[in-house]
Length: 102
Image (cartoon, rainbow, N blue to C red):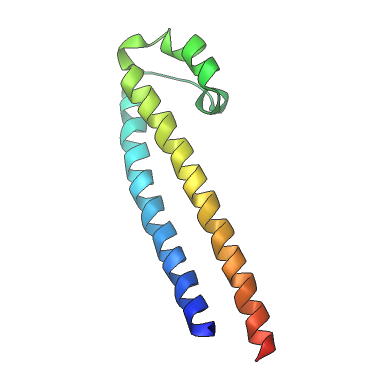
């Protein structure tokens, strides 16, 4: 059981690392495009679709795809990382519990 939990924690850590690299590459590509086209917006726009639509997409309609792709990938990256960190913490706690049991 202990070895299985260790393998799960290590696997989750590796998964988090690769997902982080994958999304970071995608987000930086889209960020580079946005910077080159002087498209600016804040974090409140990324996390609020209504503000994004009202304030940013109306200002830059020709870049709608890239803006939405950037915010979508950024939110997805944050959600995945949060879930994986929570799982790693949970399994780490279980491992600590079983270590003291044996």
